[in-house]
Length: 515
Image (tube, rainbow, N blue to C red; front, top):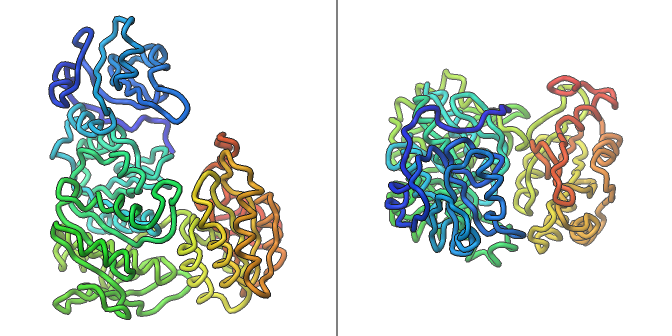
């Protein structure tokens, strides 16, 4: 990663009075020039508007002095924040609901209203990150400069930046789009969460194509049930958010979403389900590459291959291909880039069924799945490739939907031969309670072999002690994440590194060399 702040290099200043007029906000104090927008004091650059919002534990306005010391020119806040600043001689913008207009404000400051590069956005429960990476890889194969925003990584024209949210806040999105425009980027792939949509993080962004992967039980702590969860996702497919859409209709929730979309729409599904206008099928597969075929409504074929594993990953690849075609790429151009006789889709997806073991010994995979559906898809894919035993090491996040944990544990025990429940991101929840939910489900399966090992380093080593050549280990939860959130503190941690060290200790050479 880079320590650079993801900002455009060259763009004109705006006067605070112009910003206030554009977003219809109240302005007080002197009229000053502004150059950027920041939600956190650590991201402030000279000339920024500091956005002071009500947080879970405190109001951002409490940090106004730190913001000014860091170089902020003005404060953008709500009525409560403005009242707290009443005695200070400061340039202030005030709106009743700042978050609702933060996208519009950011797009005006950064000059991205209607002028940003084409955005291909993807949402759903599982597969968002993978599809975004597949989109970006297809763009590169087409010869485009690219930008990418996912849970795992954020990059513009090959330069990587830190990524901590699945979808960045609106100021960061627009700063990224402005930088992408400066760099001559031809397309941007963005992973979009339901939480981001409910918090208007894509405000002011018009997607060229919005894609939908699937919907399954997750995030009930935020949305309460599947209907409200789908409603949150559906916001990405409104006429003010996207010009066109591609929806995977393999599942009932995709079909439900497709029926309500009013913008130009293409649907895609497996040949087996036959629900989509476009269909996909697996032609051949190995532990390292899958060949797939995608058929258009007119019977035209896209045959390609990619270093992916599993039917769920093929669904993601098909969605990405159809999104590119829906976005205006000619079929002939796409075939010349990724079709027969080419290198296919040159994708590398960190932490999504990522193999970290070498050719000898057991196969070891990292995955970021933290839902029942993700477990089932991942374990089904690994089972198809494994002649021997499948061992699953799994943990999940604290302060998140607890109702899904027994379902996840049961899925693990149904599809793996051995389940090892360990700790992951406990956040501010007791990790023993998190493990108990997974264990409840796993132990409900008759005959299941289940172990509880709280320390993830010990868990992966125990898993490796159970396997040999022809067996597989899946470590699900951490994926490519570079930290563990324990007690609200992000502690540096790499499951990839720990797995590779454990492989080396066991006498097997990791895929990418011993750290």
